[in-house]
Amino acid sequence: MAVPKQGHTRAKVGKSRMHKYIEPVRLNVCPKCKKPVLSHTVCLNCGFYKGKEVINVLAKLTKKDQKVREKEIKQAEKPDKST
View 1 (cartoon, rainbow, N blue to C red):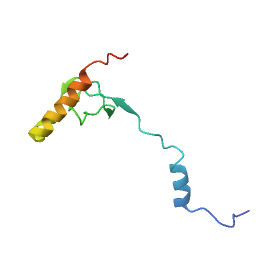
View 2: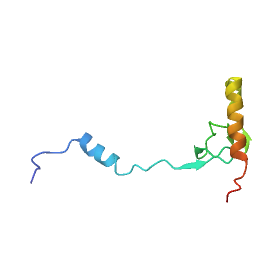
View 3: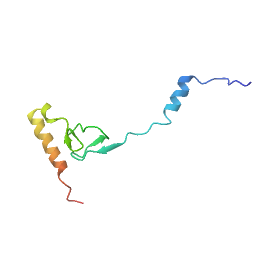
View 4: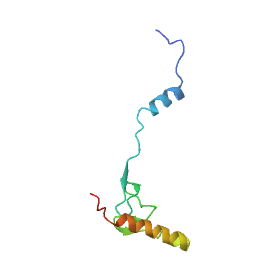
């Protein structure tokens, strides 16, 4: 029976097979702040999931950072009049 001169190790075969099926991560847009978020996860920018606040993101920030974050969220909530 024929035997290959240089066999492929299990690691070599596994590495090549691993990269055949890698797909890029698909992100959704948060309806509250319009940032990219993984599906079925809480938005780390605004703390909302399914229209409800799950995490109070602003509580951990300083007052200066809170004002900046609140402005960002309000800007994202406003509908774009350009379209």
